Amino acid sequence: MRGFRRLAGAAVLFTFVLIVLGAVVRGTGSGLACPDWPRCYGLWLPTPAEIGAADYSFGQVMLEWSHRLIAGFVVGPLVLALLIWAVRRRHEMRGPAPIMGVAFILVLIQAGLGGFTVLDQNSPLSVAVHLATALVFLAVLILVFLVSKRRSGLDATPEPVPPGLRAATGLTLAAALAVVTSGAVVAKSGASLACTGWPLCAGLALPDLGDPLVRLHFGHRLLALVAAVFIGGLYLAGRARRWEAPMFHRDARAAGVLLLTEVGVGAGVIFASVPLWLAVVHQAVGVLVFAALAVAFLRPFVRRQRFGHG
Image: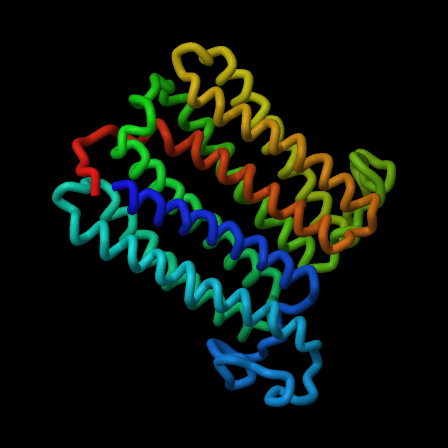
């Protein structure tokens, strides 16, 4: 099981890298640097000489091509390998096989959405759907990793987390999904600086919402505020149960620390006029908040079963 767990961990890591690289692609305006799909200018490996005079620099082309390369030749094969492994050993590895089936379906859907995003000229809606699916896919891989960790005896017996608290954690996870996705829409729509100042928007608690860009940006901030309140509530609930549910307390605390980091980075994006590296860090930390909440939500559902040590 050790090998399966490590492979699942690699899939989680590379999926995170892929999502962050997507933010780099978006931040550099490279989303359409490869105007066709799945090839790039009709080539599997574009070169400066072969693509000729293009509307994008070769560096931008390579960014988009690298994003596709990791998706198609790293994440995809990892998921396929995990699926085959889980299916072939399904009688002793009860649990991972159906989850990996879901992950494989999501990979196929995500590949199709990647092509649709290009053909749809990287519209904010297609970018949002593409990112949201990637986050759901990440959560599924996290579940596979948690299951493999539990089966290996490396995780404690499931803790007594009340159903109401589990439901609240799921609601917070959904809020985090909405925040990260809406952030991508804000960036793609050019609304990153529509609200000047922070935490107020142009010095106002309720700005003029006649401008659609202001509406987008302000809506993103409201979603972030809701998610922050939820995460704060989870932290307090986890702290109150830290003795009987120490793992949940740890997960909720991790989400809280990451949230504080995300708030600071978000403020920096406003005051620094959105330098690329800070915008990328902003999305990366947002994804980590989502991942921490996914762990907090999914861990109580994982149950210990007899499992081999393959």
